[in-house]
Image 1 (cartoon, rainbow, N blue to C red):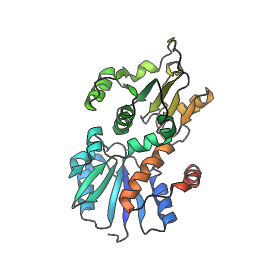
Image 2 (cartoon, rainbow, N blue to C red; image 1 turned 30 degrees about the horizontal axis):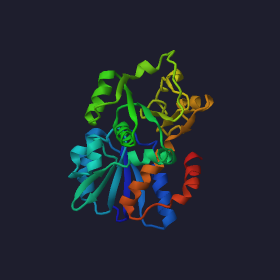
Image 3 (cartoon, one colour; image 1 turned 120 degrees about the vertical axis):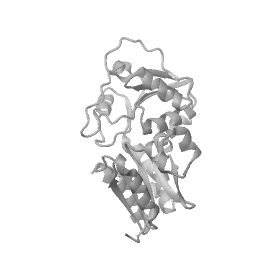
Image 4 (tube, one colour; image 1 turned 90 degrees about the vertical axis):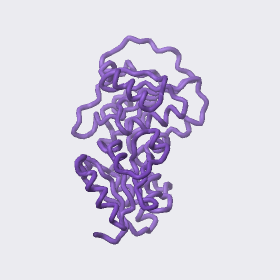
Length: 284
């Protein structure tokens, strides 16, 4: 058992995770003792994993990625109210003799939208594809910023249940496949509106099929945001860029959510003035 402080990211799969590069870059820049790792943990291994970490004084906590962001709730002693409302956790730290869960996905997702969110809009709508743990944080954050959510998942009923589980009485639910076929819908004037299209599914990730989305469903002037970061340029983002849409890639959210987690694991805030160099390393 190591005596050097460490944190880690857990998931299944996990080999693709770039989180160790991010956190270890910040540790080196700040001259802090510590290490950040990736650890492959299957669903059946979660009880044993947390039992072992509870007894490890060097462990500073973990990030949680797919598919465990909801399953880990059963293993925690306390959950931050915001994470409880989202129903998913992506940061776990030892606190006051127990394990506490937080969610930094929402704040990380919103970070590259900060300037836009400071502006006034007549109406804000977000088309959110997916209903997993990341989608819960994204939807919760966007609704808090005044967006009307359209959630698309395998079936409209599942999408409606997803909205209900977040306590969102309004919003819209649709089947993901309904956006795969062309539409002749004529969008009205979008001046003064803010439209987002957000992929929170693993579709487009390395080893996964591309997301089937026909761009006739994307309003003019939309921002297309894909939280997948392996590859950085997903088929969705490549087509969006080719069509002239503004795009945001998955590294923006990854770095943003990591910053909040880093402070909980290691104490100080990370050196965000080095984001350019960090992004260059992540894309090398």
